[in-house]
Image 1 (spheres, rainbow, N blue to C red):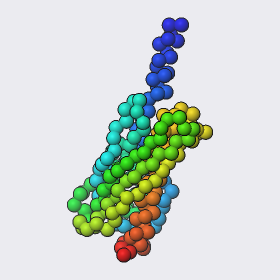
Image 2 (image 1 turned 45 degrees about the vertical axis):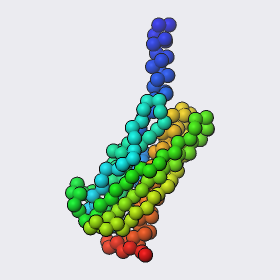
Image 3 (image 1 turned 90 degrees about the vertical axis):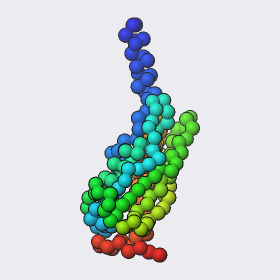
Image 4 (image 1 turned 45 degrees about the horizontal axis):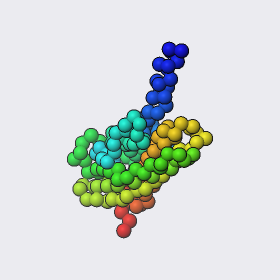
Length: 183
């Protein structure tokens, strides 16, 4: 009985704690293209994210979003590598503007994420857009509400990055190797 009394609070705390959105779950894996913006792009750390508190709603940290964005860009083929040199010709910044979480009690959670992406070439802005996307955490995939909320947050981030990659490709009218801005 004594072991049960100690074990029960640990189980309850474990099930009620939520973690930040995971990097791997936010990466876009299926957006491959042979078109590229540049050989290298410098990507500054994302801004606007926040840490998740144990009993709060799921959030996205700047660090995790930046890592997912970098991996997604390389996976897509829009550049060959990510530069560590902030004085490179091509630079990208991303600012998380808003993450809307639903109130608890819903069976399926729909989270909405808005991010501003700014891509510059030699200091001149060639892409400056707000991208909105949503992700769903379904009850059939996860019965625990906090984890379902985390799934919705990760799905919203992944879809946001996917939409960014598609909009960038469309706006820059990417041909094999050389970007050209559509006016």
